[in-house]
Amino acid sequence: MGTMTPEQLDEQKRLMYEKLSPRRRKFVDKIGYENWDPFQKPFDPIDIRRDVTGHTPQELYSKFIKSLPKPPTPDYASTIAEFTVVMIHNSERMRPIYDFCLWYSTMLEKYGKTL
Image (cartoon, rainbow, N blue to C red; front, side, top):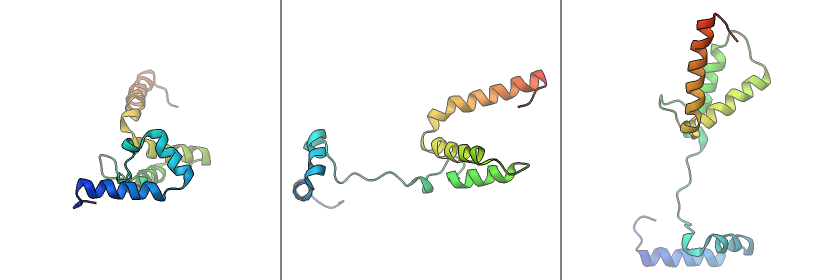
């Protein structure tokens, strides 16, 4: 909607609102018409989001699974798939887990233990 004037945008918004189903209009009324942005850009689909190395969740998953000495159990593979998506979507939420895993790995080495 790049070259439209603010007045034209307001008119488009009003027209869109009038065409909404009653249920959808009720939702817009609940959040407030002035807060509703029908022109908001959608989030990137998760399959095109990339981590800091440029990999998608699927690429990270595939590389990790291939690096394992034997095929993982379905639960293990599912956990990895879920983790890669969450990691790319919200890396700050994953930071404490990453830091803990590094710390715990060092501790296991210190005691001569493995999982």
